[in-house]
Length: 178
Image 1: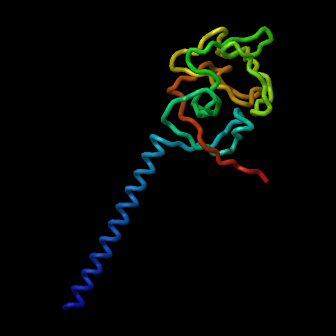
Image 2 (image 1 turned 90 degrees about the horizontal axis):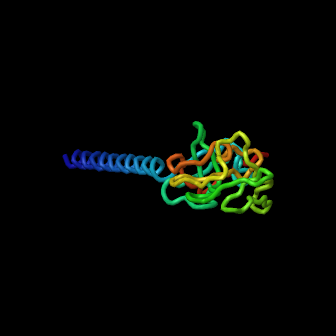
């Protein structure tokens, strides 16, 4: 009789450990789901808009909360595609063009700077939706790709609203090609 009671206790104890472990695993899965739904995001980059800082095929992690500032690399959605770009101007900043067709932000011609990864001049898009001169509207951003020659960015489709920004990039997992 004593052995039967001990066996029942051990089975109940094992069942309790299993239920506790299952509860913890479900709680952890819910926590991870909430974090990756509301706080963090993961995306594989498909374009070369930010080359060489972010390359096509790189996996990026981004933060959905917080303020967006100049020079932040962000993920945003335009025309049904998630893109990456660098915030070049925030609300209220004047945007214009030079006689030679170069982009001016806050009165400064956008320089090419090989040290920062911008190898080409920042030319305007003749058939783009960005109008010159203008100011970045409230709640919008001017976003440019570092690959200024080939990037599809605000020069092509206009300013990007805060609602279209998915988050601010905070780390990159680079895919290496052998």
